[in-house]
Length: 517
Image 1: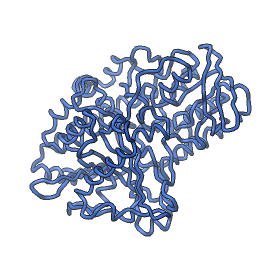
Image 2 (image 1 turned 180 degrees about the horizontal axis):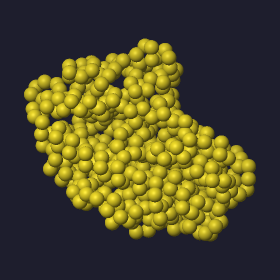
Image 3 (image 1 turned 120 degrees about the vertical axis):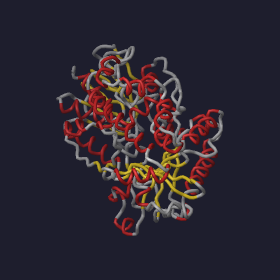
Image 4 (image 1 turned 135 degrees about the horizontal axis):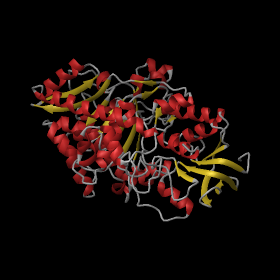
């Protein structure tokens, strides 16, 4: 039970953002209590052993790190190592009756040659360099603002200082730029995928939610790189919890918050329950890492529009990496980066249209990466010696509505068709490569949006809690983008402006708001 009756700040939720806020506030001398519903901290950014008897710690829900600012790592002195991937992506395809693909890695000459081998010329590679040169310049200018008070739209536009880039990313549907820059269907699809991660949209969606998703996927730390957390994602949240505790924060797991009452200014009361009892604790500020919809329920207010997730998550443990039909690429290269499946531009459009009509995509688009190729420490010594590997798959265009009538049956159908798309590019069935757990079952698990809603309280299974927002001030967003209708209740989770992804940015910004910066 909490040690005190009152705290300067009570934080609802012990996910990575709540832990960042707790660490900053405790280090500033504030008394802090974190109340976490589950028995462990970390939320979706955890490492776990999902397969009985297997010494493999997978980053079960969130996989990679891009948006976590080095400022937060330095400020909090986190014991965290991020490792670069030498391969950005590999995308298999069949052209001219033969298997081939596009490999993008950190060797410019090799990447150029791969473009030429796929497209027969240099135009697509030059367009790729131009397009991502533009996004890199935007990233360098926008990313530092994410841990500053919200700029106005005009201030951010001046910061970008590039009318073409601003129009491309902030004003016109991303599909217009993709089609203007690139002519090859596969290349177009690879570019578009970053706009669709957990976001159900098409290339020309007038809402621009695909633009917002794309922006957050290309600006991380000014480079857009997606790095592997050594030891798994739980290494980050364990480090955050240790830092918060060492600074004096109190963390109470197994405590589910059931309500928040506030005078709107200086006093609040948080009600909670445990398996044994009910209780309340007083607070000067309440910081909520849960979704905006959950926050409204805790306050007894009208909830915002329902969110909807749109992804399939699959975790696997393999005895070996499967062989590829494309003889030009080693599986250790292909799976080290992002392995795109059925993500050509037209394939993505078809999958979206089918899902929008209420049907599971006939050729589900997805992408895979192998954590253990970059960081073998997540495997036990025996597994590593025997050549075992992990694979994590993220499927697109699978909105929660498709699972509403029969989640289990839809999950099994979608998993089977997704793996069939992968098998189409393999020289051996993936099933032959799967390890078995202690009970002889294949080491594979799949999670739909409804599974994520049940397990993690993600609203509708939405990994961002709601649609992402452009990183500038909008009506009612406040100074830091974490403010609510109550001065002493702040949103420190993914649903804050500039939330989403494993970033810690909402936690940082909520702490800064409490501290008066």
